[in-house]
Each structure stands twice: as C-alpha cells, then as structure tokens.
Amino acid sequence: MRKNKIVVVLPAYNAEKTLEKTYREISKEIVDEIIIVDDASSDKTVKIAKKLNLKFYVHKKNLGYGGNQKTCYQKALKLDADIVVMLHPDYQYDPSFIKYLIQPLIDGSFDIMLGTRIRTRSETLKNGMPLYKYYSNRMLTFIENVALGLNLSEYHTGFRAFKKKVLEEISFKKFSDDFVFDQQILIAAHAQGFKIGEIYSPCHYWKESSSINFTRSLQYGVQTILNLFFYLFDKKRFL
Image (cartoon, rainbow, N blue to C red; front, side, top):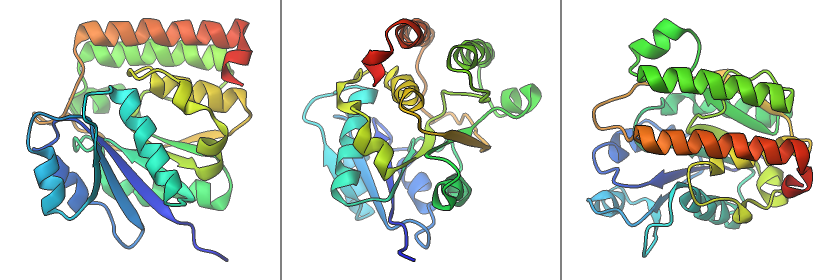
C-alpha cells in the first residue's frame, strides 16, 4: 500500500518563543514535511524558521488567522499531501499526539480529526484555560452540537487533521480571514458529508502561548452562531 504523505502546517504569528520547541517535538519519522506560514510577524519568527531549515512562506501583510490557514492548506496541497495536520506553533498542544490524531484518517474511519482539549473541567482549568474561555467553549460547543446533530466535545481546537479530499472539495478560500474560519470549515465539511472525529490531546497555556482577548473571543462567538444560523436556513452557503 502507498504510504500516506503527512504534511504539518504551522500558521505562525509572533511565535519566536515557542516555534522551536513545537518543531523539535514533531516526530520526523511520522511527518514527511513541515511548512510554516508567517503572517507578517513583528518578531524573530522567520529568523528562527531559517535557523531550523524549515520550509516557510511569509505574508507581506497580515492576512489574519483564517487567511494564514488558507495559505497553509494551499501550500500543503501543492506538495501532494495525503493528510494535512494543522498545529498551532505556540506550544499549547503536544506535537507527540500527531500519530494518534492521524491514525483514524489513515484507517479510513474519519475525514477530519480534532485534538480536543476537553476531558474534564478540573483538568482543563488546571492546564491553564481561562475560566471565561472554558465556559464560552462549552456553551458554543453545545449550540454547535445541537445545530449540526453531532456530539463532539469541542470545535475550537488549534490542533486538527484533514484528508486531502476534504481540502480539495471544500471552497475554504471563500471563508473568513478571521478566527471564525475554524468553524466555517467544520460546518462546511459536515454539510458536505465528511465525517469528523476527535481524540483527547493535552493542552497547556504557557506564558508564551498566544491567546485572543475577551473582545475578540466575543466577536468569534457571535460569528460562530451566525454561521450556524446560515447552515440551518441557507445550507447552500456551505455546499
């Protein structure tokens, strides 16, 4: 059987303090290529990428989190990736769990896999997730499960893997350049019949890890609910 080509994409913005630690813990025995897309960082992210001899691309201007992912996936598809793993390079997620994340895709059980941070409330909070983010995550996840008819533990992780056909068939370039891109691609995948699975992946909020503020989080929540409304009443947007 042909070996699946695994490409890891790192959408980076001011990740100089965590990029190398994230990269060092990605198993090179499992992963074939690693790509970093720098979204016009103002720190030394690109310098570190060069030092690590990483394949990297730089946006001349900041395109936003969604815009960064769009470039990541387009570059991965050009490399003929069979499975694309998106991992935040802020060292919140454990790169050693890539092997568990991709196995259900290799087996053909799912088309998308999410690395969920939610196992128990006490554990999640102990790992550093802010209290308001935990409860907003639970609320949004409940609403999404009801709207989509799924039963996932969370939709908001920055650690996920896609089969090639998902990224080829979904028109992700038309989605938002903002954080709600994460939800639009999952809603579209579900609308088009792709199967979404998940595994638990430990997550730690280090001092150096990136995080959006309360205002941006609120905006993201509202945009997520609006997109669920469109899914329920105008599904053609996602097909």
